[in-house]
Amino acid sequence: MQKRYLFALYSFILIFLISGCGQEHLESKDIAQREENIVEKSVPAEKEKPPSTEESKVLPSDSTGLKAHFIDVGQGDATLFQFSDGGKDFTILIDAGNWNGNEVVNYLRSQQVSEIDIAIGTHPDADHIGQLDQVINTFNVGEVWLSGNTNPSQTFQRLLKAIQSKQVDYFEPRMEEQFEVGPLKIDVLYPKSISEQDNEESIAVKLTYGDIRFILTGDATTDDELKMLQSGIEVDAEILKLGHHGSSTSTHPSFLRAVQPAVAIYSAGLNNTYGHPHDEVVHLVQNAGIQLYGTDVHGTILVETDGKNYKVLTKKDGTITPSNSGSTPKDEDKVEPAPIVGKCIDINTANIEQLQEIIHIGLARAQDLIHLRPFSSVDDLGRIKGIGPARIADIKSQGLACVGG
Image 1 (cartoon, one colour):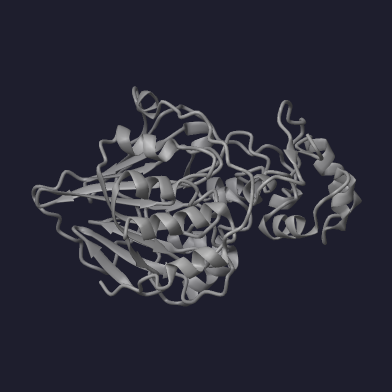
Image 2 (cartoon, one colour):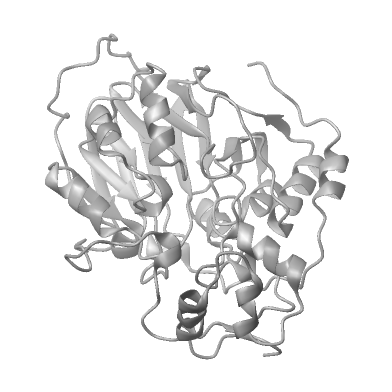
């Protein structure tokens, strides 16, 4: 595999070094206990659709099958693939949860993981690469794949430092590249090139194990999904990881029809402030007769396959229903109905990740906020481009932002 190594890594670190207050970690969850008594939700037969034009791949006779763990990390993403070939175990991790937790390391330990062959950060947002530095510092990681886009956050800085200090091989995958890891085939669906658009240029991959295929697209948008289709790459898959936590910014109807999945899975936090998954995506998936699973209601979701058939198991028995029958606003227009009690983010001292917990404050506005502060009051946030009286009212209603709190 040809690698594009991360040259002048120290320069990257210096460029993106920013000041900020320390980040507090949530208490670790007892992941091992959560995995006990896992409930089988579905044992579907092979997907009923025309067979692939490619011949079925013959798996080694000693293969123990593949397990895909869609880990419950709250409002973030983390997916673990485990399989074997010729007595050798393989592990691939795609994304690593949010920056303010340590669920991923705990879960990997509960699954007796000691080495990770490939760790992929689909894009540099803190809810996807958040704990990747912990993973690199805890386990023996063979390679790290990143899109090549950068981010001025402390989370991204820590990741770069971990790659450098552990001397981990670094690679930037590009559209139409193909790789084989034991019996698993990896097709890179996206991006073709990068231009510092984090979500839009998320790494998207198709993983094929025998006749069973998985597609994961990070936070790629509907426009990017259409570009994947325009590339001519085959995107049929049995299992689709819905883009952007089930947001309406992803899952274009044409893309869903092309993938034609039997199962769709999204990762989102329970009662998250973004309203994920969005109602129109839930309707779209369910109206297509696709089985829908989400970590917010099902907990960690496990897909087991022998390369011919697969089954889906979940920690919890939950039902996904749209929250209302009306139209659903996009991420930045979602309002948490009840104020958050006992927690305050000081807009004059919070770091870039903490600021993004405030409604209407995404990465770009968080950067503007840091540049414009200090602020004398929450009302003063109106100095930020795109924050008007209505959004100020939403921010106050959320009850999270404060000055000198």
